[in-house]
Image 1 (cartoon, rainbow, N blue to C red):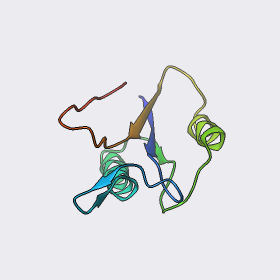
Image 2: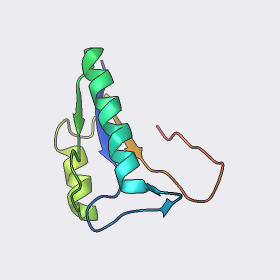
Image 3: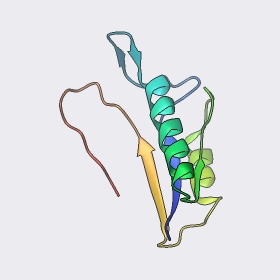
Amino acid sequence: MKKVVIDAGHGGDDPGASGNGIVEKELTLEISQYIHDRLDELGIENTLIRDSDETIEPNDRVNMIVSPYGSDSDVLVVSNHINAGGRAVKLLI
C-alpha cells in the first residue's frame, strides 16, 4: 500500500498568495490537515510535513518530505498550493 507525505505549502514568513480574506498558507494547512485526518480514518499511512504556521526553508522541506518514508515508488507526495491566478486547478502525482 502507498504511503502519503502531505506538504502544506508555504507557512511562517512565506504567506503565499492572498486576496479576498484568504491567505494561502492558512488554507493549505487546513486542507492538508483534513487530508491527513481522512487518510488516518481510512488506515492509510501518512505524515504531515507542517502542522502549524512555521517557516520551512526549501532544502529543509525536501529533506522533511523524503525523511519519513524515503523516495521509493510506493510513496505519494501531495503538495498543496492555492494559486491566485484564476481558475486552473492541477493535481500532480
